[in-house]
Length: 216
Image 1 (cartoon, rainbow, N blue to C red):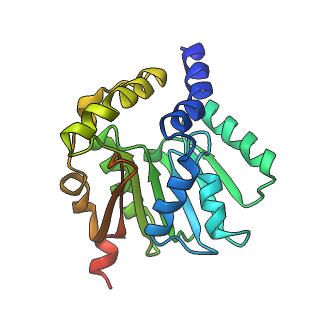
Image 2 (cartoon, rainbow, N blue to C red):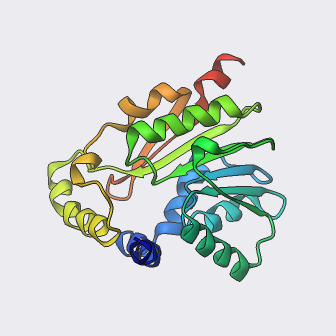
């Protein structure tokens, strides 16, 4: 089991960058700007993995902003810390624990769940847990993959998505990427914005959580 975890973490950055033709950081910046991330914000990065979102977040929030990076995988957190050390970022706090056990006392402006919606029931539970825990109002951003609506685009991109899934040894298949994000996620938002880009594969949904919107 340990060797599988190591192989997964080593393959993660390579697979994501390969699939997005090296545009992963640019795509994350686009998603975060679309979602309203601002300079000086404090970001809760759920399932941060190896920290692939860090650079995009830092590009927007600047040195006065902060990141609280959460992942239950110790190996992933270790790699994320190494990334942080290489870039000499001193505004990142790491929390290694399941999201179910997370306890955040700080004020948070922005919550990010990037490429963690593969277990839709679990991810929905995570965001409801975060919503019940955070006292402050915040923006919520979900980034993930889906199969394009266009049939010819599906034929074109499906082999690449399948290869990434196999390379990362994920437990799900392509069928789970044939979904309607607005139907499955919009119930978590009081108001939301939706965009799909990069051949209609990457989706972004963002806005205020339902409770925060209703309490305005």
